[in-house]
Length: 269
Image (cartoon, rainbow, N blue to C red):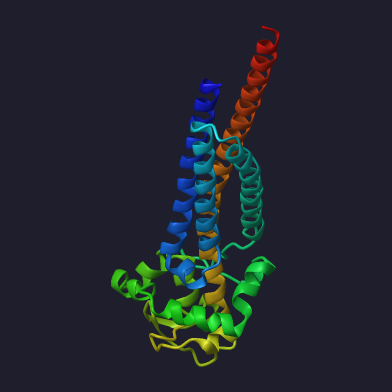
């Protein structure tokens, strides 16, 4: 029985370690400027990771000190958390399936359209109230200012692989036909009716294209890339937790069987 308890404790310690990359994925998302402005995924991931850590800790304590009710709590709670984590992994995958960039002639960077993304993501940025807060946050970052430091000549900028957020928010859409002065300053053409975003562009450095749909699309494209990376970490942690949970369940079941067999044998002695 003691050996089985030690095995269960060791297994639960591994589950405790698996909570660390989950928490780390949430913290990494929180450090990204775009995620910090939107604040959608990072806190659920961090909270879920912390709860998994605490539940794994109760399982470790229950096994090490042979507290049966803590082990039962661990089995039930961890099963619920695994289901929640699996649901989160599937949800993130489903909402990030759609949305990709479009090429433009003589441009290395891509252009992004809001309608290409999932409806759930679109609703996060279409509301004027929500977008005003996000827009204010984005304009306070150095995302666009960094372009002026890195690119001087037009061809250098046109050949650059800038981020979706920079493509959508820091410059006017390519089809508007603006003339390049620097990455965040463009001369407007005589007629700029190619799209609504063309009239929203401003050379004011706090405005730029933060009011454009292309900026919303660029933000969602950035989120998609970062969420997909985080989702891969969550998926690996999920697979590990499922394996650890099954091992703990089987070890606990064997420990109970050994205990019953020992009691039965002692009854005949």
